[in-house]
Length: 358
Ligand code: ADP
Image (cartoon, rainbow, N blue to C red; front, side, top):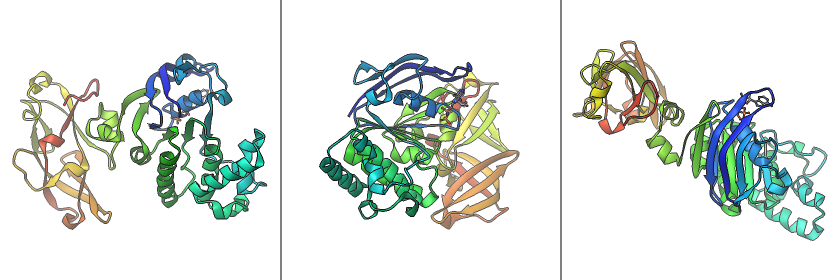
């Protein structure tokens, strides 16, 4: 197991593109860290710099406190699983998993033991004699993971390992990856654009956008205390609703409704005459009028029944929002309804900086 330090890491590609800006992070021994953000935000570039597959343009990367910028991938003792889990098609599952150890000239008996143990962890014991083409996508991905974990390295890197699987397989593999992490205890960095994967797997999440780290925190912290509009909108499904409006007399408007911000933020006067961003999560609303909350009259445009709950798409004047309600309370299409947003579930952001105010 290893601990990692990234100090002011930057990546400027030879064509001059600055893909990663001042990335700072300490990763503890055994920690499971997820880099998440939209496509092109610099997640893979950062992971590849950690793996030693890409030069670090400036900044310092340390493994167990020792500078590793100049170390080759082997010296770093990392194992990596990619999105395309290229297995050797002519080799059996056994040989694919054993490959790295065979190359190293490890004793046959030891290889046999380690392959059996790895196969057991991954539920592949019955498939060891098969060729990759006789496996499902999920099983192939497990072989790719097996090939990586058998090496018993201290750092395990995964780049979108589940993106070639269907929705059901992804859920199963997510669970298995969490279990493998518990069993191996390896320090793990996992890259994904999927916030659900990030939330379910991570000890800590690094949210990135346009090459910049937006926030680092536990899934709980990112959900409950987002640092800015981007994180608030990225974490959570359906995403947080935002209402941008100019503050008048401590209030903003949502259609014909007046939302009084004074109970939430005593210093709202500072924003008088200025634009502010009001945020609330779809699942935070209560149907009907609740005393002391922000009350909104609106029209139901569309409902999506999901089983336990229903997504309700509403409009209030020219504003739109999504509410998530208990499916027993699903309103009729085109109905006029009232909902309330408890004050403790209101987020306010500065419209200029987009940073959270309260
Ligand atoms: P992500 O993994 O978040 O999707 P990447 O790290 O792959 O993003 O890419 C970050 C940015 O760097 C993208 O805009 C991408 O086009 C750019 N990029 C990636 N590789 C190169 C390269 N070899 N040369 C120039 N730009 C690159």
